[in-house]
Every structure is written in C-alpha cells, then in structure tokens.
Length: 468
Image (tube, rainbow, N blue to C red; front, side):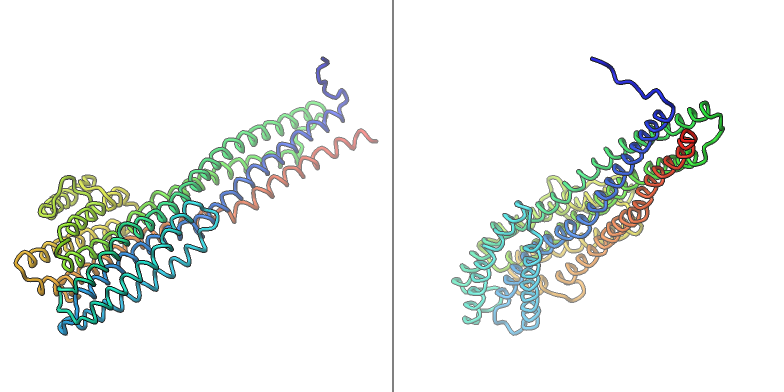
C-alpha cells in the first residue's frame, strides 16, 4: 500500500498548511459556539420551565394539604357562634386553596408535555381531586345542616370527612409529591447533562486551540525560513486572536459550569428543601385540626404530626414529648458553633447549605419561629388532656399574638424570606450565565471566522509571488 505524500511544490505545501489552519479554526468555532448554544438552551430550560415547575408542584402540594386542613377547621367550628369569625376565615382560605390548586394543576398540565413521569403523577392528582372535593363538600354540607356544636361533628359527616382525608393523605398528597420529584429529576438531568457537555467541550476546544496556535506558529516559522521575512502580520494577528480565543474559552466554559453549580446546588437545592418544608409544615398544621376533630383517630394524627415534623427537622429518636427539649439543645449547640448542625431533614439540609448574604439570619429567624410553633402544638395537646376542647380549638385556630395560627403564620413568613433569598440567588445565577453567553458567543464565532480570514489574507501575497 502506497503512503500518502505531501505536495512537493512550495505553493502546494502552503495551500495545504493554510487549509489545515483553516480547518482547525472552523472546528474551534463549531465546538465552542455549539457548547455556548447548548448552555444557552439549558439556561432557558432550567430558568424558564424546569425550576418553576418544581416550585409550582410544591405549591400544589401545599394548597391541597391546606385545603384538607381548612375542611377540618370548618367542621371543627360547627355552628358555634363564638367561632363565627374563625369559620369565615377558614371558608375564605378553603376557597383560596381550591383556586390555587386548580391553577397549579392547569399550569402543571401545560408543563407536563414530554415528561412521562410528570404526566403519570399529574394524572393521579387529576383523577382523585374531583372525588376529594365531592366527599369534603358533602361532609361540610351535612355537618352544617345539623348545626353541630364546636368539636362535635355529626358522625355521618365525620365518616365522609374520613374518606376525604384518607383520599388526600394516601392518594393526592403522594401523587403531588411524585410530581415534585419528577420535575426536580428533570432539572437534575438537564443540569448533569449540561455540566458534562461543558466539561467535554472545554477539553476539545482547548486541545483544538492549542493545536491551532501551534500550527499557526509553525506556518509562520516555515514562511520565515522559506521567504526570509521575519513576520507575516496577518498570521501574527491570527495567532494572537487564537490565543485570545483560548483565554476566552478557558474562562467562559468553566464559568458556565460554576454558574450551573451555584444555581442548582447553592440556590435551588435550598429552594426545593425549603418549599417542601413549607408544604409539610402546612400538613402538620392540618394534622392538629384533624386531631381535634376526630377523637377516635387522635393518636394517628398525633403520630402523623410528629412524622411530618421529623421530615422537616429530624431529631433522631425524639418523641412528641421530648422533641422540644431535643430541638432546644440542638439550637444551643448550633448557636455556639455554626458548623455543629445536629438536626437533619429539610432544615438540616438548609443549615448545611448557607451560602448567600442574609441567608443565615433569615434561616435562624425561621428556626426560632419553628420552635415557637412546635411549643404551641404541645399546648394544644395539653388542653385536650385536661378535657378543655373548646380552649384547644380556640388556641389552635387563633390569629391573635401568641396563638397557634399566628405563630404558624409567622413561621411561614420567615420561611418564605429564606426561600426568597435562595430564589433571588438562583435567578441571579441564571441571569449571569445567560448574559455571559449572550456577550461571549458572538466573540467565539466571530473570532474563529476572523482567524480563517486572516489565514487566507496572510498567505495570499506569498501565493501571488508564484503567479508572476
């Protein structure tokens, strides 16, 4: 087999050398611009669709669990005139939750195209929400028609409510949680794929640019020896431009990977943990109302409150009687040393991921508010233990300063501020990453094209000498 031989004439060799440099410059442009375009598309997907879908799904979970909690409150108040104002507030919240759930479902339906896991989870919610609303509506209507005293629902109405809340807890909320997970997994998949693509593009683009610079220097050296000219201005400019592209690429692609990391892990991991915590605290709040409404299931709802609290802030081995003391001990240890975080769960994840200005102070205020809300729960159960059901209902549903619902609201407001810090940081990272690409992508493409043009301009006079 005969080997490949290089052209023997100087013009032919110069054309081949130039063609090699041009091909390298074109490859550099293709790889770098393709990587930048892929990164831009990932930012559009993450910031415009996937992250909002996760937040919407957690909002749906919260609206559903609060809907059930307000149903319990309305039945709990009965026809007692002393709870007329509280009942009106609960009815308004019930209608708001129903509207929010409907809106989030509509939005999730629009977003679910192309994601089979999301579609399955969404289908389960859609299938069961109508049944829940029918059961809850019948329970409330039946109890209202009986004009029952506070804390003593009509047995038939309570039976219907049990069916409704069981449906909520065993079907609707798990399906909503699967919807959160499916959307969060979609974001994680985009993040992982894009980080990998950027790493691969960085290796290839740096390698190609180094070879391009070396090739340009080699051609200039050959021209110097062959034509006895010290510098070819166009090729020298092409070399400098290739070095500039090397620096730009070595800066841009790692910076994109870092923006992706900040957006996902520093910011959005906390957004996910905290929005899920917010939904679960709402579920725990609903468990308190169920506990007061249904004495036969009080132990079940108390256990559920503890399990939900443990998911939010895990204290290994803590019982409902010992949770407050163990939490106080963990908070004391944390205040002495911020690295000593002795609790896990969603709040543990957040306190191990404090990153942004103002985040720690906001998280600490939330933790303090969570302690106050937990202490309120024990007071409610103490009223029940003393057979003071009316006082327990009044305290549980009170929005007056020091009341349980007031402290629940204070905790929720503090928690939303922490979420806001991380959400703002997420949007800043998305904006920074996108803006950097908007500015640098034209430079990558234009720079590669300019190298091609300079290569052609640089060799043209030399080739012209052989045509004279």
